[in-house]
Image (cartoon, rainbow, N blue to C red; front, top):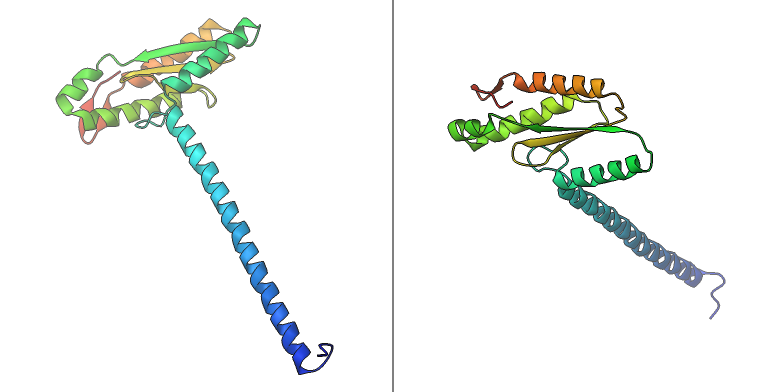
Length: 173
């Protein structure tokens, strides 16, 4: 049989082209599936890391993330690295908020506290929720205790204002 010309060679070329296209489609689908699975795996790992290092209620970094950053800052400082300030915030009147207004209102107050703390500090300062009504702030590069004092005063001022949540007034600072 001569496949060089004629109707049989046209059929052979069409079949070869169809098989090649099917093979390319299968390979392309496999590659795209692999890429989607890899992206999904990376996204899942990022999400797990975020969950492990952040407080579910406030979205702030949690005690685990705080402890790690504090340890690294102390190690750097011991080697002559840059200074930092550590501020601890404990809400004095938070328990009565939970007791009288309920935990859902208390949760909203904690979210509002987190938001106020984030507005009181610089963009690259770390605000962490380390316990029920306890927060911590690590500020890099503060070598002047007076500046850290001003930041502490600003935080006290911001948190001492009443919180209005769902028509209820709560003072938690």
